[in-house]
Image (cartoon, rainbow, N blue to C red; front, side, top):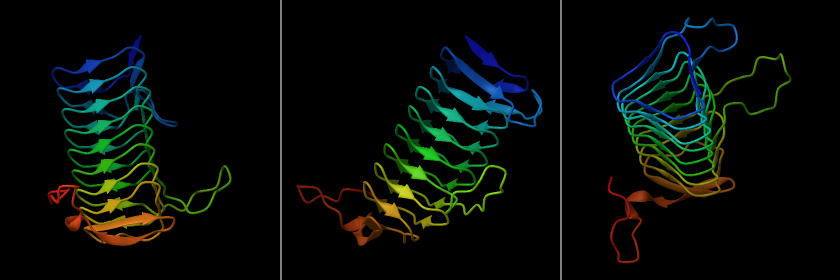
Length: 207
């Protein structure tokens, strides 16, 4: 079973698995009211749901059981791993990779070439709110080339600098400078990504 709602448009050579829903209207919108675009050479795997209003570039891929809410702008060469959730009004650049079980909440801005390892949460509200209340949104910005390691939590309002590295299991409460290596709970600066070397003494990351 595959369900495509009205005003959903596909580029050439798009592969779509079973039990996929594309163009589902969000609450308060009619079928076809918001245009949905899936770029050429994309692969949408089984049990993915993509709401309407998404503008998605070429070479897009999802894993299984992915949910992408409405009104996102997603660039070229983006992959979204199994059990990921992307909320609405998110902007994602080109060549961004999400490993499995990442949760990216609304109004997040992600620039080109960012990497997310498994289990990352990008949050946008500092305090829980009661149903019916309007939340106070503080968007997170993740600059070009940043790497967010597994099980990290980015708190609302922080900016992750370009080519920085957030270590596994970190709780990021403050903005991270470009090229910085941070980790811990709370995360603090531990070094510079340009100085990281492998066991053979070679630079680990080419910036």
